[in-house]
Length: 172
Image (cartoon, rainbow, N blue to C red; front, side):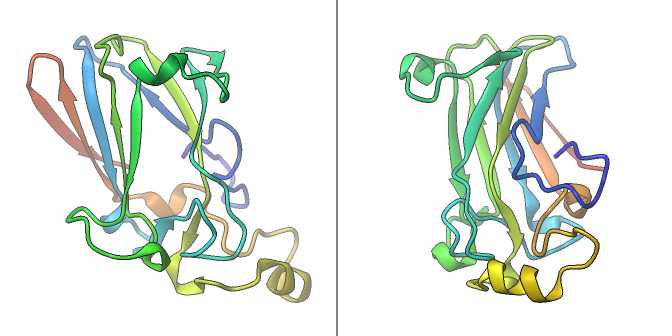
C-alpha cells in the first residue's frame, strides 16, 4: 500500500502498486502478510473477516491505463488469487493472508506497473458493524478498522522471474 498518511485506507483506488524495477521479466509475485507489524491484518474482500464494509479485489490500472472491469481481454495478462493462509487453511472469517499475482503473458518487464485495491482489516474486529463503531467512536476522521499500509511493514514478498530465478524481500 502506498499511503503517506496512516489515516488513509488501502481501500482507495491504486492503493497497492507493483512495479518491476529490475531488468528481468516478472512471472509471478506473492505478498504474505502473516509477518506484518499488525499481525492480524487480512484482506477482507467480502466483509466477513474484519468490519462489515467490503471491497472486492480490483485491478485499477495496468501500465498507467485504467482497466475495464467488464472486459475479459486482460485475462491473459494477469491472474490474481487471494490466499487464505500461505498453507491454504482457514475459512472466510479468517480472511486472506496473501495475494498471488501471475503474469502468464510474460510481459511484466522493466518499468511495468500494476495498480490494485481491496479492503483490508484487522481480523480482531471480524463482523463488527463499522457504521455503529465509526459513528460512536471515531476520532478526528480516523477510519475504524482501516489499514493504510504502514501496518504491513514486515510482510514478506516473493518474486519469480521468467528465467525461473527467484527473489524475496520485506515491505519496509
